[in-house]
Image (cartoon, rainbow, N blue to C red):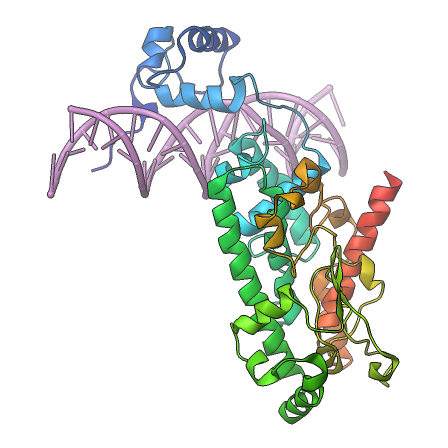
Length: 360
DNA sequence: AAACCCCTCAACCGCCGAATC
DNA sequence: AGATTCGGCGGTTGAGGGGTT
């Protein structure tokens, strides 16, 4: 037996609020606070149920509510937070001062969802809509978005940081596993093994251990790169000796598109190709190698400006080609789908993103 | 000018978990 | 410990406005 809705109570007014009702509610709350919402309507002289009053106040009348169009930055934040939190509108709203969960929910359902869909991105998973390619980088949009929480959630509080740390840890684990899976699946096993073992002394670590998923060495490598990988403000970039360059000019070792994420050159030899314009591919706010650093080190607190950084510019979504098409084209040509395809497409997103911002 | 369609967004609804009795 | 109350959340609805035919 369910309790009857407050809206069912006979005689209580429903529907749009009249200005006089608003005035009564504002006046009462200003003077007394809302107290018990259930008791409020009677005390305030309103013929409404308490729930209706609460909703009207929190979604419309509260003085600190920011009304009007959402900015590009706010849309970015919403997309990023949604990728990590899902339909937790109140949680998302808590990161957008002056915005209500209802407003954000409406924006999502009316605008952002469509934008993502039109761009070939699944608004639920935030992954490119490549149903049949469990590809390495198909998951990266989600992971990058999660990583972006590092910068976005610095101001909000301890519980947010704890959540962030958990999500970041999960993202790291997934990325590492996917790197390994991609490595193993993209080349013949013996070639992979040969390549890895041949390069092992140069890189200074044991690839047998490297190939174990969830191996702590992987995280250690990300946070403390081996010899040959130089520290860089935005991550790690390998210094490559000429003799290490591959003969195949299309295969460029390392220099992964992600600032902060590096791969040993032998992974590049295994078929991970460098995308064009790799240094611009991803936003600088994306830190994989240093994923935990901004969390721990307050120096990395970049303030609200970092809210602007995200993996997708909503405006660019209006113009970018569907992500899925690249994979389909490659399939038509009987070419293997590898990670660089999606990265290249991401490059387009971000290039257009840059173009968009430049033209603003 | 009218009919139709689409979009937006305020408000409703039902459920859930926490607090209180 | 169980029942009840309350506040909050996410999903859904529908009135109204604007655009198109």
